[in-house]
Image (tube, rainbow, N blue to C red; front, side, top):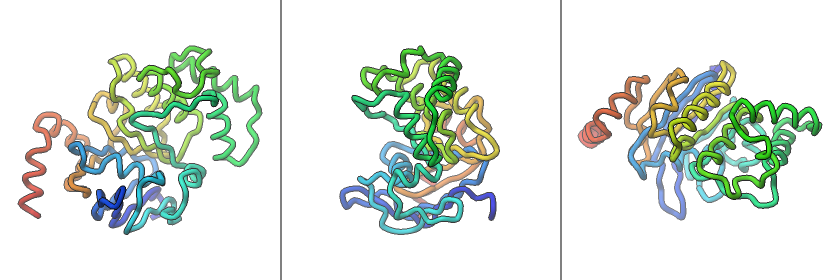
Length: 252
């Protein structure tokens, strides 16, 4: 299928010899927004890290195919070059690298072309203004001394400046106040087009207010155990995961 962006089949993966993902299947098409839900420890963040190629996580079986290319053996930077972007739950501090330099270098790596400083700086400043980020922010070291909200805004800024094909958002809204959630939500909405896709882990339905959610997947014990439309988010917000997990135990 020409419009398939990411196809995952029978994915097995783990960390430190412990299997966490146990035969997971997932297909994301261009233009789609997918939401991953599940109890703590179900494998949600592991899935994001395995897709991105984090070296700590070992893929032991199955396949990861991006636009027809098997990326299972590629390193993280090679996957980024092909259009993957992961926003972390807790972004790391990187002393010595400014926000501006990091984004400019990442764009050069992704496009393979030299990015001229002055036009880039103008574009960056305009985007920061849109996200209500102080202009001095561009010259600060990445995430060093940033508040939780600043770190998340930084990731949305990176997302909008780099324009990846698939954005992997791992609880980008966690720990944010109402206003910051609104800015993150608007930023993700601004990023999303018919040509790119989002895979989102969230516990906060408000970040999804400005997005049309195509599919919701519930992960438990390393597998997807329930799928549905956006109405599944409301059901889980109301009832929790207990009914879904009980039904899965009966099937199992």
